[in-house]
Amino acid sequence: MAFFRRERKSESSDVTGVDQTPQLSLEQMRLAMNALPMGVVIVSKDGQSRWTNSAVEDLLAQGSVDVERFNKHVDALAAVALGGESREEHVEFGDPAVRMFEMVSAPLTDGGGAVIVYDETKQVMTDRVRTDFVANISHELRTPIGAVSLMAENLMAATEDTDVARMASVIFTEVTRLNDTVGDLLELARIEFDGLANTQEVDLVKVVEEATGRLRSAALAKSVMISIENYPQVMIMADRAQLVSAISNLLDNAIKFSPNGSIVKISIEVLDDQVKIVVSDNGPGIRGEHLTRIFERFYRVDDARSRSTGGTGLGLAIVRHISLLHGGDVSAESTLGEGSRFTLTLPLRQIGNMGESED
View 1 (cartoon, one colour):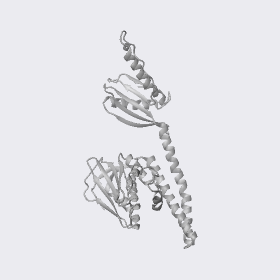
View 2 (cartoon, one colour; view 1 turned 30 degrees about the vertical axis):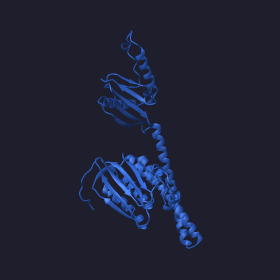
View 3 (cartoon, one colour; view 1 turned 180 degrees about the vertical axis):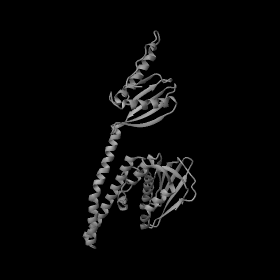
View 4 (cartoon, rainbow, N blue to C red; view 1 turned 45 degrees about the horizontal axis):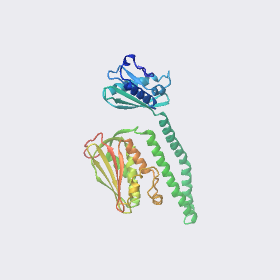
């Protein structure tokens, strides 16, 4: 059934002698619906009558080979709406895809249903261009960064205990920071582009162990002990690589801002419908005015301290992005002079008591 037309009001609905005020209100509603930037398809309770606003006609060019496929998606969602359910779909048309739509079914109080169609082509294409740009420019930077880093190391070795060696050391440190920033940008771009393409059932304990293993050397360098306080065996649906990255970034942040010889604690807390990974430290703490912004990209509480610890300002932004992709959240609590506590919350779609973990 084609929807690229608007049904006219039938003559039977124009009853002589009836007050025309309701009809005027209906006409105003039609004008308002036609002014909306998204497509709207309204289906009667029996599914026999439907009305579409003018935006639907502009979603795809007349005669497009994708019109039939578009109509099938609308038909299916209309049936869902008439069944009293809401559903959301993201559909791409063209090869390669040139139009992207978000389609949402919505039940109506009178028993009918509606399908709302949003054209998200421009937003998706803008996001892809931005992501591709960051990924490409980051790759292009890797080669010169590696060359400068190698030359700085060679210069330090050849001019040991001289002013040149000290200047080369500064160059090496700053290039290392630049390399870390480029790496974080690449990771953030990859997460944004891939989304949750590799979701699978993962053992959360093994994920925490892998993340902890990545930070062992950094912790040893500061004589910081990583202590796992709570160790329940639990399986969740997640992107394993992203989850390891998120927990690693939380641990890395805790270690960097912890005093030498302190303890960084990590625990897993299982609730009814969610699981929490909590990382706490004994660092200097974070002022309240900064807590709401620390998950922003490149936001630093203290620029000077971040430079000394080698922070890129992207680690916590990566954690937040990963948590939102998984339908969860990340939060922070802190007390000045006592430390900070970061909580990564994820929905618990599947849980299993696995007993002892395998070696």
